[in-house]
Image 1: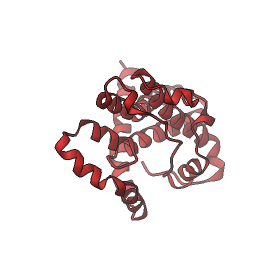
Image 2: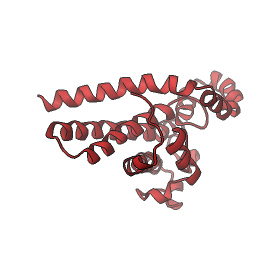
Image 3: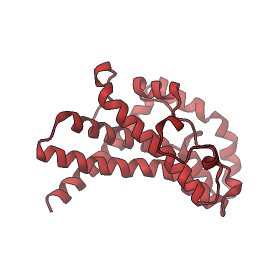
Image 4: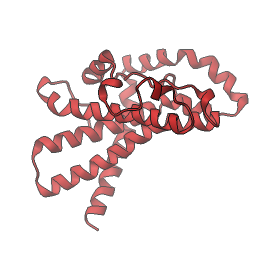
Length: 210
């Protein structure tokens, strides 16, 4: 699978898929934080499936054009968690986890529509849902700040390694930019995403033909 190119006439199928992927990702963070005892996101109106509450206009535009962008981060206060390390782990994992679940669900719908010969527009939206959700999950699991993977890593690292990780943490965003500028980010994302998407399709066809 190759990264999609930017053509204005395909925004009809890309924008709904992207909005769903981003919205559910951020909602999952907010919901999990609330579950662990932190009401910060709820108090700021982020415990919602309304896309407008989560969008960053520039981040959305970047995602549409170059496949590298961002939504508004869900605010959390780890000191409110019943267990700080466990809470941080599950809250950070909730976003990528939600994207993988949506990607799997969308794959099942896509396979079902394909087998039924349904309209190409709906299939295109489902296909974009699979792509965006899987890519967002894989991208966010990279253990570099400010991505979710960095928080997952710090929540499980033994204390003796945290000091070293915190010392390189400020350079995380610059490393991400370098990966993007030198074309290394797709080298990381595409093979892993392909494996996941192929696995999802295999599971979907296996269930449909059971």
